[in-house]
Length: 285
Image (cartoon, rainbow, N blue to C red; front, side):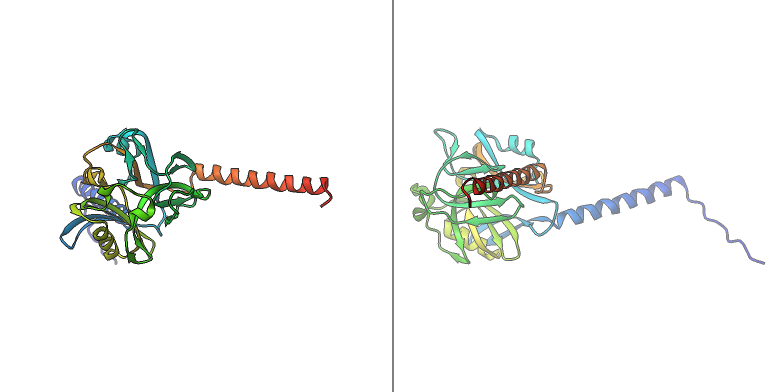
């Protein structure tokens, strides 16, 4: 004869507690999974204190974009509109016309012009790279969805040797000590964005980025334009409205705009092949 074990009754309060714990575990799991894509931290290099955001570009669900304002715009207006995970100051601009001093590409369209500095590029598949461009010469943006030119190269193949004059910059203020923002890429395909309120040189910025594992890195606009934002918090705040921002956003780079680009490319190639065949028949080739 089996003895029936007494059943323990779970009260409504206990049930609510279990449900709440379960939801909390789910929420914590989601946060942990999401946070593996990017992280914020602080570090010190030399006498300067830095804020840093690191993005794992090997993971899905994150994309990098360039944002352009047709006129100088308050940082919070842009962040409120775009809702990025992180943001950093973009390229230099001229106060007299409120326009960038170098090329800017957004969704494959050029919106600003200027042939100086290195280029921070995002191709149509979402891959970020830093490209050197000869000063005062055009750069081919055909395969890039986003680009910000006017960057000062501070780390090139692991070497810290900034040379703004050779890149077409003439403003003497660039050479001195100032608040700085910079961006670098590691060999493990991590994107590192840094900013400091400390007054440092370009070489010091380069060494700080190299200490984070960046063998390729550039300086963005700095001084009163220095900005680093992460997850609702401004880590380094600008003193003025800005022209461009480089953003880290949640989302898939292979979105509808990408699919439209692929379709246009296919149509163009198909049209070219058709014309080539027609010309072959016409001229007996």
